[in-house]
Image (cartoon, rainbow, N blue to C red; front, top):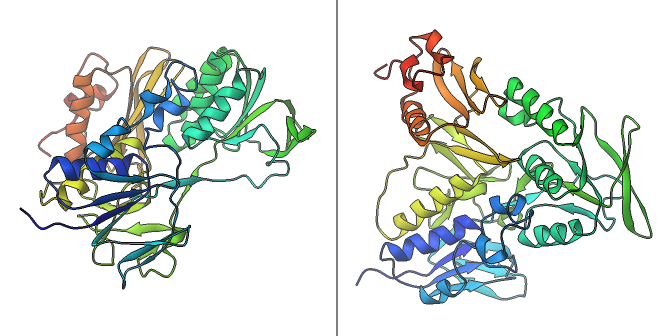
Length: 415
């Protein structure tokens, strides 16, 4: 029998569930506790703004594991359990109820919290953030009777909830401060196509403007007014303006932070021995792209959680994940592979959203560093994934835009 440890995991999202499951699957022994401030078992967030909001999926479909699985794996899942402090010297975590729990190894997987707008009227009934299953339940219920919705933000939460609410038949106004939808993708041709798509689906898209005030009657939302003076009627509003790392409980712990994120090494270890971090709060060095990154997407939480669980059980598995983000809007899937954080100096587009298939090649000094995809075969995606591991130089620029050639034909795979 191997050495047994008491592992405590702070957080109850996908990364936390993956750490626990992978640890057990790899033969890890000893006690495992998941301390989740959420009142629901760990769930996948991507379906919340898509199939769940549209009423196509029930709650059971979004959970990472059936709830009984945790007991079967001897994982102590504690819901509604908020961690307020970490004391590495005593190897304990303090809980909101006044109790504490000791650990041998501590995993920080506390995820992110939605940013507030700080706008007058934000506390009116009918104004929602969209991060938790509880949020999704409330919005889905409100959408049953609402006729008009306001969505603030042009990132993936804003884009997906707008599309889902519109498909449910609500009139939707979408407001974003940026001049482009999905501005974070840094792909103006795609942004223009998306704006046309949303307008064609009846969405009132307002760009370069912000909501200055929510308005209501009897404590309930009736609409909003923008800084430019645009008046919007809505009984339901979703604020999707980004997230911030949930690491306030680490104050005074000695764990090294950078802008609220936990600095970790290649094995997800923090600056304090015995404490690790994964998922939304883990500031790690991407071995493929060679610089520190913070990736707050499903695929990263899934991969890092699984890898850390195996590491804690004694299996030293390599980090080999090419970062991947995905979205689905009005039945169209969009993905981004690779690294936009390190910058690029050129974007070459092949195809378009209107044509049903596209690849955006992001180049830095003539080398491939990221790829935007929609309507691509699994084979093409796998090929791009392989190319991004080595970031090869372009050798045939004409092939970049030729839909009849494979993505790799434009690059020197050996270079």
